Amino acid sequence: MKIIRWIVVLILLILTIWGALHWYYVYTPKASEPELAGEYRPDNTVSSGAIDRTFSYYLPSTHEEGAALIFVLHGSRSSGEQIRQMAGYEFDVLAETNQYIPVYANGFENHWNDCRASAGYSANRLDIDDVAHIGLLIDLFVQRHQIDPSKVFVTGHSNGGHMAYKLALEAPQMVRAVAALSANLPVDANLDCKKSGIPISLAIFNGTADTINPYYGGAVKLGSDASRGLVLTTDETAQYWAELAGYDVAAPNRVVEYPETDGMPNTSVVATHWSGASNVAVSLYRLQGSGHVIPSKIYHFPRIIGPNASDISGPEEIVKFFNQTLAN
Figure 1 (spheres, rainbow, N blue to C red):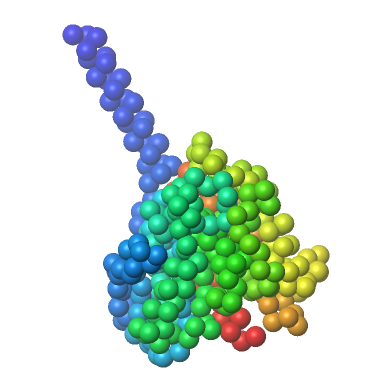
Figure 2: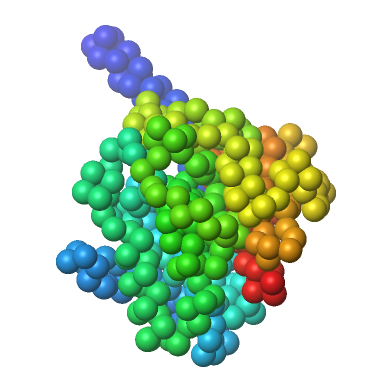
C-alpha cells in the first residue's frame, strides 16, 4: 500500500509542477472584447478555387463608400478570430475613427501558402493560390461594401507576415502597402515566389529575442520543427525593400527611439524610417528584447513565445503607417 501511496503522491506532484509551468509559460488571459458601435460579422464563406474559405470582418458604424480595407492575417496553426484577439481587438477599435474595414481571413487548414519553398503544411504542398484568394475577397468587398480597391492594405503575423511579403513581391499592384510582424524574407534557396521588382510601402515589426523567426536570420523553428527553412536577417529584409525603393539603407530619414512606458527596461522599440521622392515608405521597428509577438499594450503573449513589446501599440503604428501612404 505504501508503494501505491507514493506513486499517487508522485503523480500529483508531477501534475502540480506541470500545471504551474503551463500557467507560467503558456497561459495568457484573453483580451476583453470591447463594446463598439459597429457590427462584427463572423463565419462568412466564399468559394475560392473550388474550396470553401471562411473569413470574418468588422463593419464600423462610421463606414462610408470609398473606405479602405485592411486584411489582418493570422500565423501558423491559428485563425482569423485568434489574431483578432491577439491584436487586442485594436483593429476593430481603430476602424471606428480611420475609415477602413478590418478583415480576418482564414488560411487553408490554418496556414497561408507563403514564399517559403520548404514549408511542409498543406497550403504549400497543394500550392493553394492565396494571392488569387485575397484578390477574390477584395472584389467581394468592393461589391458588398463599396470599398476603394486602391486602398487595400495587408498586415500579418508570422505565417501571415510571410503571406504579406508574398503579396508585396508578386502582386504589389493589388495592395497599397503591407506590414509584416515576426517575419523575415526567405533566403534565395528557400524562396518560392517571383519578385516583380516593383517597390511598395512596407513596415516590419520584429523582436530581437524571437526564437521562432530569428531576427538575425537562420532556420525558422516551431519547437523542433524547422521545415520552414532559412530566412534572411531582419536588417537584410529591410535593406531589400529600402533599396528596391531607391533608398540608401545607411541613410534613413528618421530614427525614433520610443520612451520606456511598460515597466520592462529589458525591452525597447526603435523605428527606422526611409521615405522620399519615390512616394514609397519603408519602416523597420526593432523590438529590442522582445519575442514572436504583436506589440500591444492590451494583449500579452504567453511567456513561451518570448518577452512582450508593450511600449507601443502595433495596430496603432500599422494604421498610422497605412494612413501615411494615403497622403503620399
